[in-house]
Length: 258
Ligand code: NDP
Image 1 (cartoon, rainbow, N blue to C red):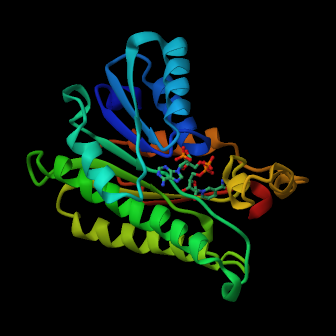
Image 2 (image 1 turned 180 degrees about the vertical axis):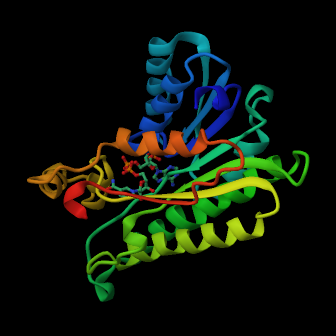
């Protein structure tokens, strides 16, 4: 795996916590030398800077890390992000579309408009904004293009549940978009892949309950959720396959959720 990822430039969205943060560490640990470049993006740039420093402490200068403040829901920011990438990080090889959130638990008639909008704008439009902005870099490569798009969906996109209709709908939209894009790019060396986690213990539930940590902790009480590292290992695995191997669609959940 590490040989194939040498020299690659990887952009991760939502890298300030949870799965995205773990992906940053997992890529760095897998390719500690060999010219890996990581572009870590999220809105909380202070956190990204801390993570960049931690990676530097752990693997030294073997991995170049660029923290960039970016709200994926803002198309102008996304365009500006790609246009403003420093030369060293411009030749992106892998895009991990991970940024996403759930807000509130409510039956469909009671869903707050604001919550609905932020979920669609982040999970769906944000992911599409990033994809559209990065694809020209992939397509500029010979033979129709090359590169990897790894979308983080959710088991919620396959198995909708009461009280989560909007979040589930956003993740079903991610699936549909991912599958259609894969077909559009079938004759290229651009791989479009999706990883759908089940329950993972991150800040996800804290966001869901508007910052109420006690409510979030209760979600994980008595079960044995995945860690964000578990998912990050799968992300790096699919990115590290031989170019002709497309691990198109992966469902990964803790045993109790089976
Ligand atoms: P976290 O809340 O820990 O991380 C979410 C990340 O997304 C944060 O880094 C956050 O950064 C970022 N983010 C949110 N909104 C935006 C935005 N507008 N622009 C840029 N970044 C944004 O949760 P997870 O790690 O669990 O979530 C990661 C992905 O995994 C999401 O897509 C989620 O839907 C999916 N998932 C999670 C599961 C779980 O059980 N935890 C299960 C299945 C899927 P910041 O706030 O700094 O912008």
